[in-house]
Image (tube, rainbow, N blue to C red; front, top):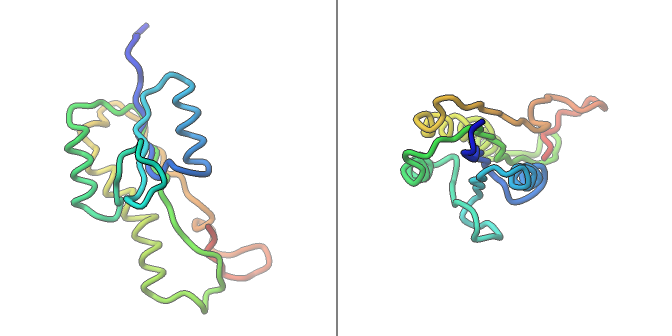
Length: 139
């Protein structure tokens, strides 16, 4: 049995289920690399903008040679509103964080993920309508 600690990389790990995952893996004895945006409320995590290729590449350089056993792409954004309220720019911003970001992170960390698992955690954005028939984007 190997005594080497496993490493998990979690995007957006400062609150909610993301923070709970970071706490869980820390208590389970894993090395946890938690990330958040630059305006995060903590200084004990890696700063990353998952929509910015330069930011993602910088984090990948910092982790060069570090094996990652589990990548959890869980950074996300959104809003609760009816379809007529958001602008195209707002919609594209949400798409960039929730779709493009996980792609950029997974691609940049590919050398670290040789035998890893990758989890893409979605939000209610994966559902087009609510139960009352309104088109809503919730977060």
